[in-house]
Length: 215
Image (tube, rainbow, N blue to C red; front, side, top):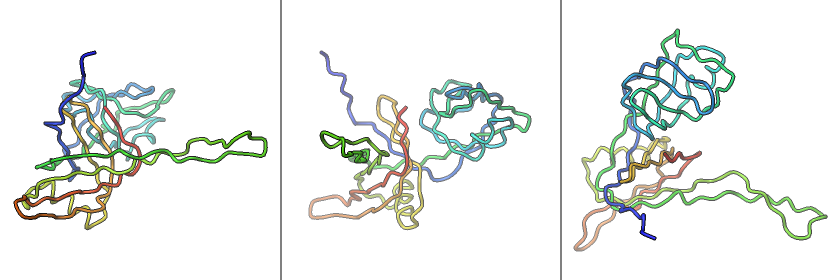
């Protein structure tokens, strides 16, 4: 079989550093998933948006909450929320405000999403052997190595997040355009160097919190 492997060259990692301009939403197709209409919204798969000002019985499932954008077309996008049997109306002119991304430059390596589900022991006195069910998934860490650039906004944002303890959104875009979007805390961002070496930050360890979305 011919290999379908892809090169890692061209991969991009971004950190959420601000909010972009709010997108006006004009309609929603209720169901699971929910399809949102927004003319020429300019969003990309893997972007993160926060909804506001929906009305109707499904409004509480969207307003004030953040979602990863999926299945993007020029004028629509999908969010993974179940609004089946509910209503979403636009009389208050709802909006979706996106995270503004900053690229982390000089990216050398990445590794992560290395977590696993916990095991819950359900063995009882009738069991013939140990019995388990799986518990919640811990999505683990995401670690990167970068060549140091003291003026790079993405690297500076990572250091600032490590110092403040703030939770940040991250988006990894692979050369085949698939994305991984997740929230994480920056646990450490060490500096290293040596003879006949460039100065590096490695490894910057991101502790993932919650689920990640692959698009």
